[in-house]
Amino acid sequence: MPTVNEMLAQIWAHHQQGNVVGAEAAYRVLAEKAPENANVHVYLGIALFDLRRYEEAVAAYRRAIEIQPFFPVAHNNLGNALRMIGQVEQADHALALALEQKPDYLNAMKNRGTLWVWDGQIDRGLRWYQAAIALQGDDAEVRRNLGIIYLLQGRYEEGWREYRYRWKLPGLVRPAFTKPVWQGEPLAGKTLFVYPEQGLGDAIQFLRILPRVRDMGGTVIVGCETKLVPLFSLVEGMGQIVPTGTSGGPFDYHASLVEVADYTWQGLQSIDGKPYLHVAENLREYWRNRLASLPGLKVGICWQGNREHHADIYRSIPLATFEPLAQLPGVSLVSLQFGEGTDQLARVPFAPRIHRLPEDVDRSGGAFLDTAAIVANLDLIITVDTSTGHLAGAIGTPTWLLLGKVPDWRWGLQSDRTPWYQNHRLWRQVTQGDWQPLIAEVAHALGKVS
Image 1 (cartoon, rainbow, N blue to C red):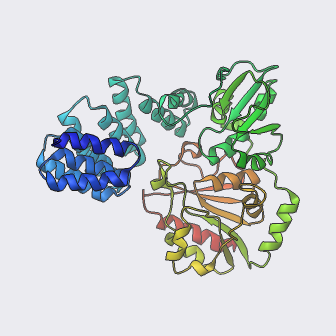
Image 2 (cartoon, one colour):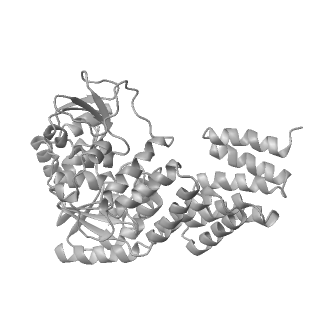
Image 3 (cartoon, rainbow, N blue to C red):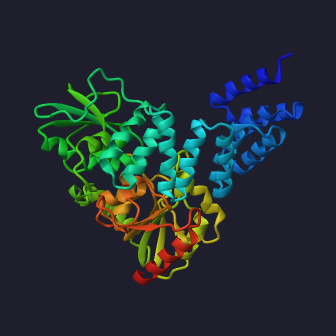
């Protein structure tokens, strides 16, 4: 008969392989058999956290602590779960207890730093990251996070340097090339193979940087998923674009698009913000005719980013919150939401006021080609911080970007404008998790122009 710890190890193996739902069920069965085993409740809490059922995770961690008050891991995990439901002070208290019980607890220091950074108290969060660095200076996650914070603050030299530690973390993998990674070496007469590093938004944003390689005398080959080749081909002066898995010919170095921005960085003042993605006129005309019957100001909206993104809880907005926009006269709302988030249309009473695009959008010409043409024919885009905003910015359609209290680093901390896209206006949340005042402000401004 296996012990509880042996059973936990077996369930944890399945958990780590991705079967989180099955692991949760198994942890619950074990919790019934061993209700006074604190470890079981912690493991259950981890599964619930991974399933984004944060309040249930909090309850599981609290139960573990009731059974075993001296339990640094449980206090740390409790603090992290409380952070996800906006209980900042309680989260800090839990993390403080974890560090009181284990003063050299690196994860608790990281989590405490993350807690205060996401709450907007960046300097307070930095102090905990710096404490973590003092404890373990080679921790890649801390160094990566420091890089992001420095970039957000506009401390680019420090930021890019620390952000390079991201390549030491699991999950970010380069293509298996034998050629060296480019780190700013002279490119005169050389060929650089570049590829997207993370999401589509990053790729669209940093494609505009590639002319700098040509300015250095180099040649660029861009590799991307086959479905993205048509979209990338719309970018002015792109040169050769090849599907992932092919090289397009010999090259001397390779690098991600973000790394090209890093090693050619000349400051925000060097970015002109002009549109650089040009939609084919025939496709633009086709969607102009398709959308012509919509009355008034044509406004595209997007409310949900990729749920797997680490910061999605801070950037996506429930569609229900957009209701003040739907009540405005003289405005036709067009859903630019595809896939994730579209289920919310069935749950809001104002859904009939939102124009839904045909099911076959982007299926004939290539990924995002129709979307690009639709965006080009709209008067305004109102979107959360996801690839839709980057696409609109690259095309030049006026865009109102809705940002959480602590945004992605590229948007900075204060201005309502960005050098990345000249037709963007940035709208910033004041209180973390509370989108209603911001949407009310946006609706008021939209009412004045509709």
